[in-house]
Amino acid sequence: MADELRYGVAACQVDQPNPTDRAEMARNTARMVEMVDMAVEGYGPFMDIKLLAFPEFGHAAPIYPTAKSLLAKLAVPVPNEHTARLEDKARELGVYIQTATFLEEDPQWPGKVFNTTCLLGPEGLWYKYRKVNPWIPWEVHTSPHDLADYEDELFPVAQTPIGCIGAAICYDWLFPEPLRQLTANGAEILVRVSAYMDPWGATPPMDWWTTVNRCRALENTAYVLAANQGAELSHYPPFSWPGGSMVVDFDGRILAQADPGTGEKIVVSEVDIGALRHIRKRRSGHHTLAHLRSEAYPMYGQPYYPQGSFSAENNHTVAMNEERIAEVKQRITRQS
Image 1 (cartoon, rainbow, N blue to C red):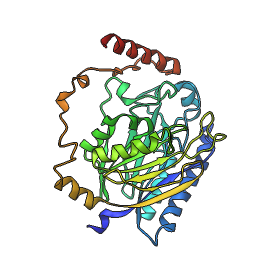
Image 2: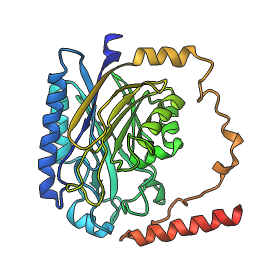
Image 3: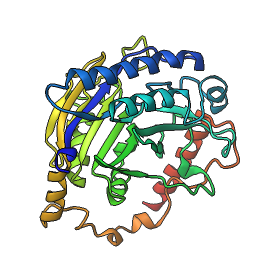
């Protein structure tokens, strides 16, 4: 059992042209399947790679300004042919893969586009996570929080044979609450699927990427496996992507990190879930979840960005995001 809980993880950083339509997505998926083989086989003499993660927008990014355009050009159901290819590879190699994100359409929510990542393993699909905090105003995909009557778990955690795994996407990580909730739901490894652009990368003076990953690890006593985009400007205009994919332990120590900068990279490290479980059981100090005085914070008893915001509108736009942000800012200003 101990050997099953001590293994290698791989953050797989990509640098591929962003698809402009669904037909171009297969090229990106094929390359990611190749990278899984490279990580598992290449690092085989050193460790058994059991968990791999890919960045946000590895399959497609929201390059069109409205949800209607995204639905016409890039949105796909999840699961799909791309998840099937990755699932086959996971089954072949006996590994778990946190996918790059898809722009997802779901007939249950017509006219909506979600930014979605999946955890796949030899057993199949464990969960799909839909980004709760889109990077507004630019991102016009829908947060499940913003839908009236959305009943699925917002922060699913998979209890796999290699430990309890949960994921959140990019901007989610600037809020401590999503990772705290994943931890409360049982997560031992927090996977960051991200497209974090310059200047908020892995180098001073604004190395938010590194700072946030380390902070979320230590404040939740959890491993962090963080895969970031490494795409050059010509592949994903108008932004360039600083990479720096990394693995962090439960005390906030960086175990491995790719050199900052564009380009494909695979960074690996060993994790020990048995040691993590021992620490969570043994510690009484610095056990922040056990020390959390949740009722001390009345701000959480009132809404800020309101739930059910876009339940009646199918063509979600940047202008709609900006209008809602302005409404919330005005209310906060009046309160203060």
